Image (cartoon, rainbow over all chains, first blue to last red; front, side):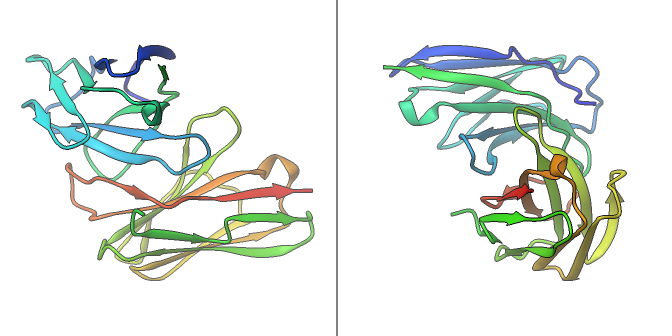
Length: 108
Length: 114
């Protein structure tokens, strides 16, 4: 079973920041938080991951709470091409268990 | 382009056919994976290979037979499939390290079993 809980869907206006929450209250000390996204009918795409500290790359920022029980993926300026299903995953080894994710719709 | 390629991209087969799906990664990774994604369902992990050795078989029926001849290639041999096996089959690879191991996915093979 997936160890994370995400809202099933969200909307975001084009050009605004999209903040996607994820709860992982049972995360253990050696488990990383990963985010992937899947655009319709394509393979999932790795976005970002982190252990304790906040992370930023060219795609997004990842904010992890101090107790590590939740995190937020931030797309700073959402575009129509960011419309996808976003998956938050925790794992300590190579096994990646996908939940249903959050379907993000970016609206013009 | 993720560095993981899959062929064919689409496949239609009858229940008595035998076919194979191919995956190739050009990333120098040591671990490879097969996932199944049925319509409107989350991805389901099927098999994991680390350094060509199978380390995970997620209770997959024997009509699906994986093969990993080397760390760059992964096959999924299909025989006597059922219509409910129609799905998107995704291959992925990763460095295989504990913990921080990002997976890179191919575009998938969309399979229809008639």
